[in-house]
Length: 526
Ligand code: HEM
Image 1 (cartoon, rainbow, N blue to C red):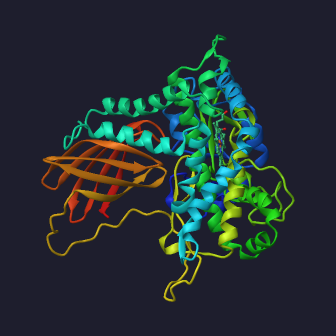
Image 2 (cartoon, rainbow, N blue to C red):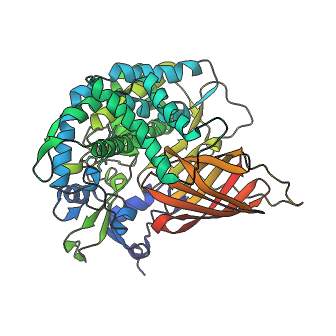
């Protein structure tokens, strides 16, 4: 076997998450068209190839989405989920959204973005540590999208509360959480309520425009959006914008800490912030790869990629292609500026790129104003990679004095909590409370928090992960055997069934995730 044949790139291997770049380099140089037999997909990694592919909408389709698993499952979404469509469906909704998500509207939120950052960061000044994700990344992008939609902050809380209240019903009586459909309708009703309120109280926000603007639908009929379409579009925008921008903020914390000289340059000259953000986006793209379905036989490097194949485009590899970026593996805010592929290319190119850049720029300015120096606490940082994003779930840093006995070691990927080996029979654990769940999923460890409550004989609760919270259902316990269902909505709607055994304060077993198969999980009592 030649050296080239021995390259293997498995998107699900967690050990590649901390540093996939040497593998990407080899793929670019030795195997620019790669085929993975185990998961049956092709991958390209050179800048020019990915740019051409993303522009070729006839040969490469988004009709089953832009994530490998979705393409393999031939996933079909409603027309208004336009990231998941080809023309003419995509064109109809994208054209409408381009009239609504305008650069002017994005630019108008700068003061609010700054205020959100200040509110998150000010209370941390004077302390020894903060977390780029927990304290900033997980909060700010979500608030900005809500604000653009026109949900005033007091109403954001009120809407959440109204949904929560309906979930609780009369004093002391929980509603039947096994009835998921009813629950989803309840949640939707909260959103519907807000839409109706906004219809009666029009403003200059995105929601008002989504309600009032007419567009030519894919059938050529001029009309307004339905409520369901509005809800889908809001989900696409929030889904595409929140997690990615969150990851950008995490990479900011890590990469600037590792390049203190360049960080100092930016502190001295804040005019460098926009180019520093651009370099950060190139160097560590929050979404490292995109996928498409191949619509006709395509020949690349003398090989035929058959119609119907899944093609992954390694954006993170293309962004370091030496033929385009000299010394591409180095972070250099002073490099000659050239476009990267982090926001994609062609008809699906990110519609929120100017907002993402603005959020990144303002976040960097506000962090550096308050904290010109920091060091990452890698021992407690958690890195993960899913099918759509790669980045930090937690990135704690020291901004003050670091404890003397702490060593700084290499970043580690999120790992499932190790089950302790109890010497004595484990003590009975109370189920109520918070459990840290880690599913060893196909795209690496997926952390979540399971919150259980008891009401009489009944256990109810919710599970939070992938940026969304959903109630658990069908909770059953028989001795040390345990079972529950979590209907997740992100990254796609799916029923996940957890079957496990309780051993002390650890539950371990299998999580069956829809059509994607079963994966080991552990849950540790927090
Ligand atoms: C650093 C942050 C971000 C990154 C890295 C990013 C990346 C991307 C990429 C690569 C695509 C193309 C997907 C494809 O070709 O299949 C995309 C599409 C999209 N992005 Fe972003 N994005 C970011 C922030 C945002 C924000 C803040 C918003 C919302 C305001 C947003 C809204 C969208 C939408 C709606 C699409 C679908 C466009 C279409 O299909 O026509 N993104 N994004």
